[in-house]
Length: 201
Image 1 (cartoon, rainbow, N blue to C red):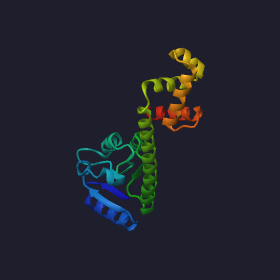
Image 2: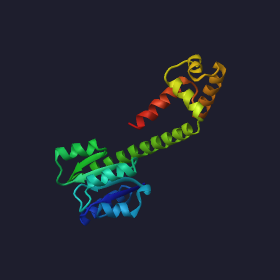
Image 3: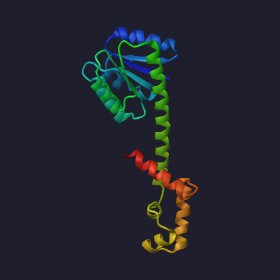
Image 4: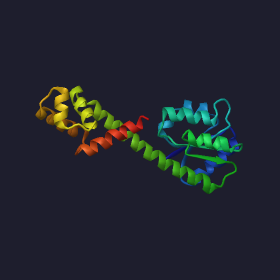
C-alpha cells in the first residue's frame, strides 16, 4: 500500500517518509495539495497524511476535495498549530484522525494503519453499493413498480389491484425482482433497499 504525505516542510516530509518506509510502507511525498492532486496518484494511494497549513489549498480544503472525488480514500490531518475547534471540524467533515505535532512514531503509524483499514472497508462497501445499484438499473419499469409496492408492505393481491394485473402476474414479477436483485426473500430485499437509501443520505 502507498501512503501520500503532503507537507510544505521538506524536513517533515523526509523524516516522516523515512519513518513510514522503515515500517514497511510505500511512500510518495508532495509539498503542496495542488502537487498531489495534479499527480493523479489517488487510485494508487491507500491513505493521505496532510499538514493542515499548506500554501494556497489548505489541508482542510484538500480533505474536502478528496472526500468529494475519492470518498473511500482516508485522510489524516497533522498540524503544529491545531486547536480544538479545528480538530472537531476536521473529524466532523470525515477526517479519519487529527494529530498535533510533535507526535510519536507509534502514534502516526498506528493511525495510518487504522486509516488504511477504514479505507479498505469503505472501498468494499462502495463497490457493493455500485453492484446493487447496477442490478436495480437492470429491472424493467414494471418490475421496479412491483418492487416499490413490495417495499411499501403490500401483498401480491394488493399490488395486483393497484397495478391492474393478475395476482399470478405479480407473483412472476416478484420472482424476477428477487432473482435479479439476488435476494432470497422479502426481508432481504427490504434490508438491501434500506441500505441503498441510507447511502444516499
